Length: 322
Image (cartoon, rainbow, N blue to C red; front, side):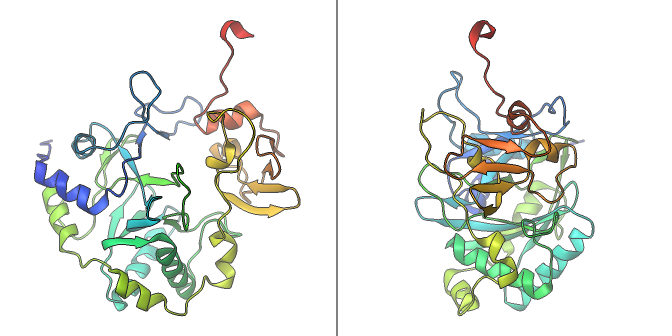
């Protein structure tokens, strides 16, 4: 197999279309020993102290297939994003993405479908960064109009919208999605966009040819819109960070899960450990104390160690086993 040449121009085009902030994630080349999944992590320097910043060299390595990066949608300094991605990985999900793509064309928006392992990603590119909350209101209304399932409501499966939040606080990251045209580490396969030849240059030329969504058009489209009532619960943002006492480096579980609802004195969410084994279909096994998020419990019996391990943040053992 002849590898595509990754030219500086190709990298520059990729940066212009998809790079909105310097934070990023990397997909592990080695599967998790229990789940077999290839999790993403935030890379750090050789001393393990400082998070690395996304660079053109990193993007070149991604396009070359040497690593696989995950991209964050929102820049917390502006609360804007360069792109919107709709992730769908359930049965008949590709059909739903095609419906969305067609509905977008009626609004004068060209979107590109990228194949994934279990479904696909639908990408909308912006002429200039757009407010995340406006993008989400628009897509939620389209999903409601088409009666598409939305993950995070009462349904265990459905589309996921990136950006996943309306806004972020300084130091927050939100949720990352696999960068387009990267090689998935689980099967070493590159997933391309439909609509162009399967070479990196042809793919990039196709993406550059798409008409980009601008703010004036988006504002016109969402004029008078609010989040549909049936989707208001998933749209309502529960803070991903709740201050708690202790070191600034301590583990905060609310930064790693998506809260489904708040009831009584607890936030409720899908247990990461249960999810590894296909359990917790209702997504509410995990209870996290509202008053002190350091306190959390899986009502199906998963231990704290199992939950942390599933999130890729195992509990650190004291030196000497103490």
